[in-house]
Image (cartoon, rainbow, N blue to C red):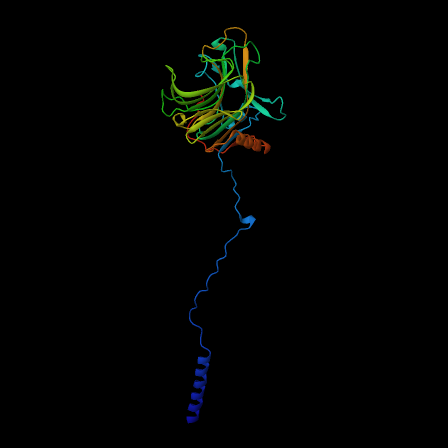
Length: 329
C-alpha cells in the first residue's frame, strides 16, 4: 500500500511539472493591428455615368412630317389671335420640311406666311415648344428673307425667334419675353431691314402699354444667321453671328419659365394692299438651349457641331415643367 502511494505521488509530480512547462494559451488574445490600404478601383470598377448631366434641348428639324415634330414636344399653332393682322389665321399647314439646297442630307423647317392684302386671306405661322426654359443659353440658326418668294413686295412682315410666357393678365409682374425680330420691310415707325432685340418686364395689350427695353441693328440680314441669347446672372445679352448687339439688366430679366418659339406674322396696318398673293418664308436649321450656363456663340457652335457629328437629331434632357404652353402669343 505504501509502495502504491509512492507511485501515485510520483505520477502527480510528473503531471505538475508538465503543466508548468506547457501552460495553456490564454482564453483571449488582442486583435491584430489593422493595416489600412487605400482602395484604388480598376478601370472596370469605376462607375460610368449613363446619362448626360447637362440639361439640353437640341432639335435639328430632320423631320418628314409634322406628327414627328409634335411627338417631340412642339405645338404648331392654328386659329386666330395675337400677334398680327386682326382676322388673320395661323395655319398648321404653313409648316413644311425641305432639304437644304446647299448641304446634302441637312433638313430644314420652313415657315411660309401669305397674304393678298385682305385679312381673311392672310395666313400666319407659329411653332412653340414646351414652357420650361428660364436661365441659360438660347440659340437658333435661321434664314431670313428680305422679299417674298412670290408676288409683289412691301408687306410689313416680322421674322422671329423668341421666348415668352402666356399673356394671362395686363401688366402681370411674372410676364417674361425675349425677342429676336427682323423686319425687312420696316414697321413700328422704323426703317426697313432692321433687327430688334427686346426684353420685357410686363405688357398690357389693350390699350397698349409696354414695359420693355430694346436695341436695334440696321442693315439687311437676308440669308443664314446664328442668334444667341445669354440669360444668366441677372443679365440678358443678345448676339447675331457672334457679335453682341445688346445687354439688358436685372429689371428686364425673365421672372418665370418660358416657351421657345418661332413665328412669321404681318403687322397690323402694314399690309401693302389688296392685289396679288405673296408668300414669305423663314427657314430654321436648328434650335438649342442649355439650362443654367452661359455659352459664348463659339461654344454654342462647337456644341451643336458635336451633336450633329454624333448624328443626334433631337435631344431633350431639360426636365419637363408643369406649366402649359398655349402657343397663343
